[in-house]
Image (cartoon, rainbow, N blue to C red; front, side, top):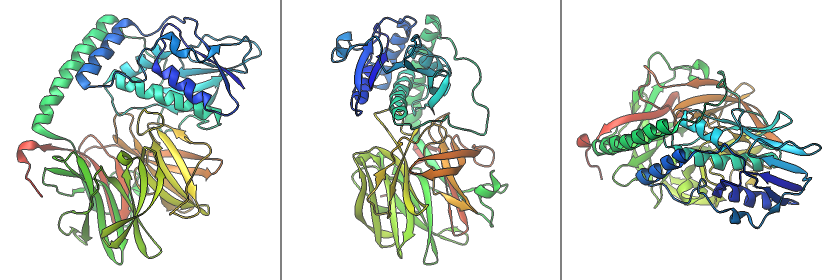
Length: 498
């Protein structure tokens, strides 16, 4: 197939080179480029904002938004008169008898439209349209809300993922949410004066952040727990009227990612145990009695790199754990030899992958592994990948339609999947406002080697019954239910615990 990439030759970025390299890696593809000037690009005042953000936030100078010379496209010949397919990043291709894929952000084409959405704090719905019909779509996201350059680059990276996914027939439909989509056309690019004001506010905000970090341990999370009395959040679809009790910490660490397990009659809670002075987390555990925790979480697994999301489950009479270890580029399986401790590595399930919150489930005669993957850079939370295996030990095979979903509002796992009758329900993270800002409950309507489809039926936010800015994980066992979210921990109240 002859594919032509239409881009603005007046503003060639590292993003374009990366996209061309990924397209060139596909089978039976011949690539060319159309680099005619397009006009209407990002103004110089935005470039000045990018430079300031790079300086004050310590961002890399070699990100996807980096300008590169036109000669960087020399390996690709000029577009032939009649390619089989044109991937149009500018929105100005009009050819008869030629397939054209137009890339849009909330209905508008071009990087200026994308940046305007970023600056407006919007979550863009990216679509690849052919003759006005979407053949692939995804809600793009970032963990760097408020930093225009980092957000812009994350969304460029995921735009490349979406284009590659469209080539394999993945990410066909727009993510569905139980609330109206953002209406209206993309906002206009702010004026130079407004961008200057934004740059000044960015610097002031960074100074405030520095002062805040001198006074508080941030980020700081907390775990909430309650007895369900037979009705959990999957039944209630709302916070319980009784609210939640906090798992106490000493201020020098926080607990997050609660995973309980009932094993041999004893309920044990596993958590990410993040120690502020070390700047990384270990896995700790605490037993629960009828009235709550029996003591405080104690370390059970520590490695040289950060660990979190201790996905624990029982199988074949033993307890297993798949902790998140994306800092190591692996997904590993551990077995408890002296429960709740004595963890030994059994095998590596996946390697050379930055996978977040690996979650396993047995369904349709196979095991499935869900995780968001930082595909070619970009956000950690908006690209859902699947793997399948005959056994939880593997071997694991990537889904042919990966990424099966691109959606910052519902891609990333948020706990174990549960069954209610014939329904498979999946907790998901809604990261549109920020990482882990809200918790969704999705019903999986289809899961096999053809693809995965889900419908988000409920979104739960922090509020009067769960204070803080975030609501992040949901798990239950033994009549208890656990969530987590943000908290505030003053540094001057911390106590050292070794």
